[in-house]
Each structure stands twice: as C-alpha cells, then as structure tokens.
Length: 312
Image (cartoon, rainbow, N blue to C red; front, side):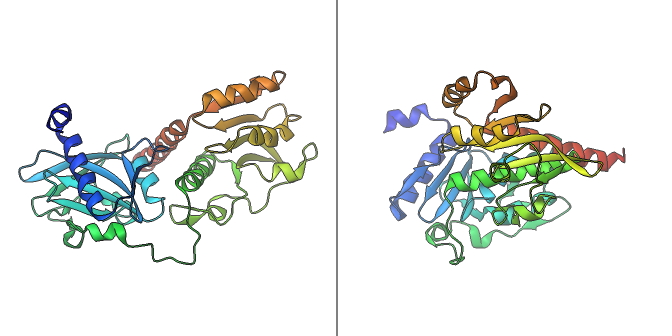
C-alpha cells in the first residue's frame, strides 16, 4: 500500500483517502464511467470528488461549468472539496453550488475558480462575500440520506445524461434562432422541464415523413419559412441503447435533402457497424462524441455572454 501511494499525486492520494473513509460508512462505491469527471456513486448520492493538496490561507479548485452542470443534473448530487486533508472536506450539494456559480469568478472558457478559505467557506466575488459552508464540513452523513423527492422516479446516470444532452442541444438551437422540438416533455435539465426549453409544443407534421417516427426523434431544429416548418437538423442520443433505432428514426427525413443527421454517442465502433449498413446514405450522418456537445454548448453560452457584455 505504501509503494502504491508513492505513485499517486498528492491530489490522487487525498482522493484515495476520501474513498477509504467513505467505505467505512457505505461499502457500495462505484466509479461513474459514462462521465469524464471523477464522479462516484456513494451510498445514496452521486459525488464529484475534487482535491487540493496545497493551501495556506485558501484552497484553490479549478472546475469547468459543464462539469458542474452535469453533476448538478444527476439524482442527489454532491461535490466533495478535499482541502489539504481528509479531515477537512466540504461536502456540498451540487445544485446549491450550481445556483451560486454566477457569483464566482470565471474566465471566458467557462473555467470557474473555486476558492475555499481557511474557515472552509467558499469565496464569492466581492469583498468579504462567502458561502457559509459550516453545515457541509465533514458532513459524511449527507451521502447516506435518500433524496427527499419520493414521488419522482429515480433516474440512472445514463437517463440523466440523456436529458442533459437533449437540454444542451435545445439551448444551442434556441440561441441560433431555430424552432426546437423534443418529445420528452417532463424530463428535467437545470431544474426546467424540457418542454419549457423547446420552443415547439408539438412536432410539426411534414409531407414527406412518417409522423410517428418523426415525433420520437430526440431533438429537432426547424426553420419557419412562409407558413411552413422546414427541418434543418436532427439529433439522436445513444448512450446505452443500440444505434440502429436512432439512425432508423432519422431516416424518415431522408427525402429532405438539406437535413443534417447527427448521432451523439461515444461508441464509434458500434456507430460504424450500423452506418455501414446504410451505405447509400451514410454521408448524411455524422457521429459526435458526448463531450463535443458539452464544449459546443459552453462556447455558445460564452459567446452569448460576450455579446451581451459588449452590446454587439
């Protein structure tokens, strides 16, 4: 164990100690592999673990907006900030921190600078502004408490990520001026129902498309021309399900020559197997990894913010 610890960076060692401490409370600890961040399912919670091994008066954590957003959209989410020692851990609800992000300094790339002071409070912009974290310091029991929303069906991480990607695609389409549609009305993204993010309540019926297939496509962008909705982009998100169904649903739009089809998936091998069976039309389709949607979404938000700031 000593030899193994020598190979670890100080931050990795603190994370390892955090997980050891968590195992004392709850043996069920699982790395969430579908996310790129260091996030674990611990007890009743989903926890992003960040560690800072250095700190005199403050501890610094760089964290990207899209990472916080992804964690905050999981069921019962927390972020654990390890401040130099396993005995100084701030275990804060991710949605609570997400709602305070606008008060924390960040750069144009959406990188937030989380500073935690010697009293383990999170520093906000402005003189002497803080998030009082005393109730979150070393509060390991928070990870064992079930979510208090008993009436809502629990989502898997894949379910939550699917809704996140749908929400991001809808927001990108809205920013670019498209009319947007999504079939999953009641699913949530940033505590808003997808039906309140999409600009179309119902899917337009198109002359050269099978409506029952069309209205099941994960996200659609339309342009409104004259008295007609013209499809421009179609998106299918494939995380743990097969890619066949998504490619097949979008095929109902093949007669619309200007529509672009996108499969959002990290499984390039499965995508190639499926798309090679559509050899005649495979040039109409494109594969986009999940993280690229997050990066595009972040860039669109940053550009929107910049436009507002300079008034141009």
